[in-house]
Image (cartoon, rainbow, N blue to C red; front, side, top):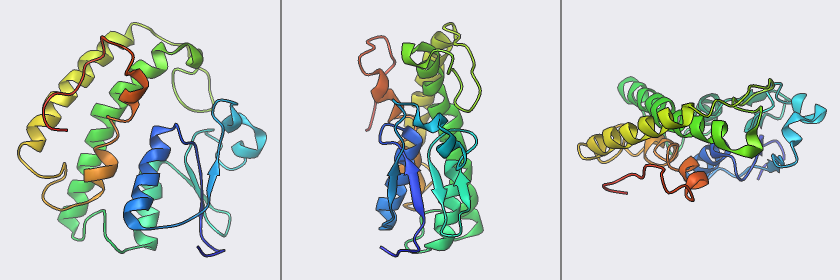
Length: 202
């Protein structure tokens, strides 16, 4: 590990942090992982807000002090900085398809699950939307979220019956990082018997 390597501020229980850790593992990239204690609300501390004003994880901090938030931006930087093995495609077509399917996995799957999580868990009261501002929970959104995630799983099963990986035939971030987006948050709700479960191939 180089002393000039970037460092990743992250939380073990954070789905978005997990996405980046999976990517690092697939790439074989080693860098310091700086824990941010979400339970202690460390993300709202002055020290962390100086790094990421949105008060969310993960954040990649470069040796020159530049802070990069948002998972797609972090992965894009790492792909350019550590091109081998390529995980975001190697041609314009592949890169476009990976970007398209990553966006769909996040909007249709991950966001659907987190809508229920953030509007239902007592520990997230006034934290219905991640970020620096407070938003009250809307419990009615939980029922809509159940329908959204059930439809997402149905659509995902159709897609995976057609191709080996979400974005097509090439092993890219879609096969490990992005396909995990809708699945990891569901573990937060595994005790909810009414939560829709994915059927079909796992």
